[in-house]
Image 1 (spheres, rainbow, N blue to C red):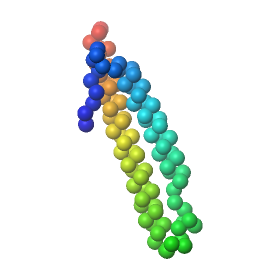
Image 2 (tube, rainbow, N blue to C red; image 1 turned 45 degrees about the vertical axis):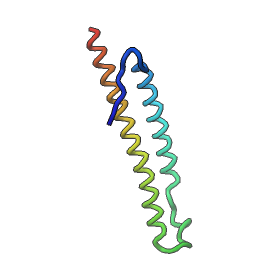
Image 3 (cartoon, one colour; image 1 turned 135 degrees about the vertical axis):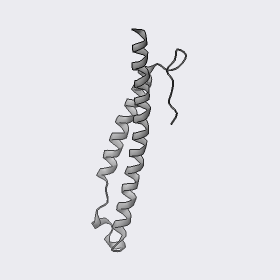
Image 4 (cartoon, helix red, strand yellow; image 1 turned 120 degrees about the vertical axis):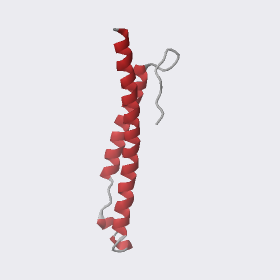
Length: 92
């Protein structure tokens, strides 16, 4: 994964960290909203006895995709934070 580098001509570390924090909050909200719309058998049984299984599998796959994006953004955030800490140590 490619991470941003904090430097004088780029976006500040605080701004980069704030952006990733905002994204993580939005992703957590999106995952929660997605989880709440989980399939219920009563909405699928008229299509056949196994349709709920397919719907549930698709639903879980959507959640997993968002969780994977959340993991990526968390890794970016951690890399930014590590650079901030390293820069702070260098100033002492």
